[in-house]
Image (cartoon, rainbow, N blue to C red; front, side, top):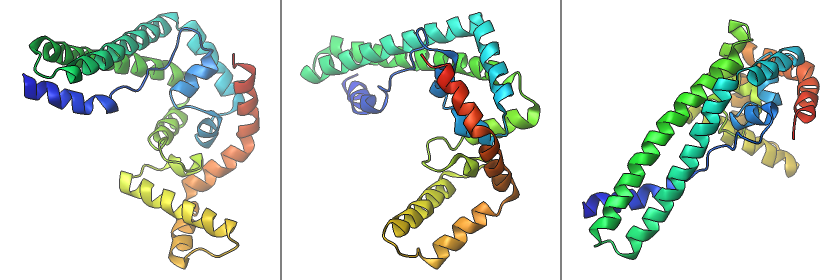
Length: 224
């Protein structure tokens, strides 16, 4: 038991990210909590009128919103208990009750994360429902690259983690060279130009130019 508790204590720090607060947020803010912002919507080819329909659909789907609210609060409480149990365990790792509390809290977090994931999936179904299949597929593809600090048009193509890292490094190198008034390495420029030449990325850049301003305005109008 003691060894299991120690393992949980070591991994707690990467488990304590807070869930989004859904009870007091607007539909636009809920989309942002899902990683769906104006630029990614634009890159997916979604127009302002389609976004308004998405927001209307979210507002009407009360059951899904309640489920998300409940799952979010449950996960927050479970994470809080896990943090407190960790502190209790670290004060005295030899205490069997502290180890039991920590393992129980970790199990509760796992269950809460699963419930939150299911509720999130349901909300995503609601978000995607008003969209044509090609737009919903492009938006889902865009979301797979949301952790990378790259412009949204690059995200319309599925990439591996290694490819995302290479893209991010390339864009960073070019930006750094530009700030210094220098020219980036030729191989880096060639790599980025190759990414930009992809037809899907080209279309996404055009869609961003066409739709971003209108989408951004809707988000601003629907923010709390």
